Length: 103
Image (cartoon, rainbow, N blue to C red; front, side, top):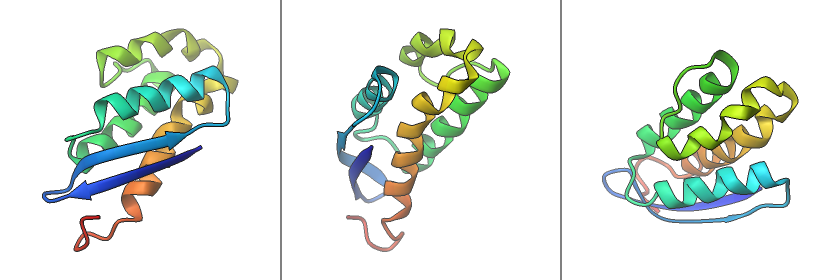
């Protein structure tokens, strides 16, 4: 999975693109991120990834209502990473942009 982001001041995602070579869960998670990320603050998006992991492992609420579609995955631990991988890729893309370089 590859996620590319363009970040503009003040640390907001202005554009996002993704390429997924994975299962339907990976594709769905990446597509939801692509819908939610534009104009989102990078910190909030990183927190969403942590919240999704907690939602799957501990039954915590999902950060976005659209992510509720992954609730059945809670009981299939071997598929958790299929959902969280897109958030990991997003975090890597965000962290690759230095704080003083918005793009």
